[in-house]
Amino acid sequence: MKKVFIGIDNGTSGSIGIIGVDGAVTKTAFIATPVMVVYNYTKKPSKLQRIDFRELINNLPTKGIVLLERPMVNPKAFVATQSALRALEATLIVLEYLGYERDKSYFFIDSKEWQREFISSGVIGHDAMKEASKQVGIEMFPSNRGFIEKHGDADGLLISEYCRRKYGK
Image (cartoon, rainbow, N blue to C red; front, side):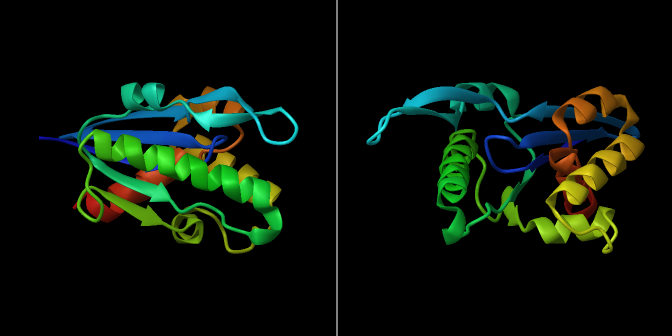
């Protein structure tokens, strides 16, 4: 029986890691969260990124266990918080459309929880964490090296590995 573990690094600059285990065979996929650029008509027209829900539907398996990273919420970073919450809502709609159920087949995780598993506690700061994520991801998943280097971190893939370790027994 095949088991699928999905890690979603929430946000429009996030990533999705998918680990499929079928007996002794393990396959991985690592993709950037699909986004689209749209106009944001507030007082001054500007552009913003939104989750491309059609592409997300096409890229996610219909069965598996999903760990979804909780979004950053910080009133001092209103625009970033707004983007993260909008991305979360779009992702939840896609998961529920595909038949995933909260606390049965999809779960939330704080970044600190999965990071403790893979990244040294001495690594501090956003840029250092991203670099550590990239290096650990390349070491653990060398076949995904090119995409990890291009994306700049392996967060989605490391979340999916954490999911496999937690729910794969």
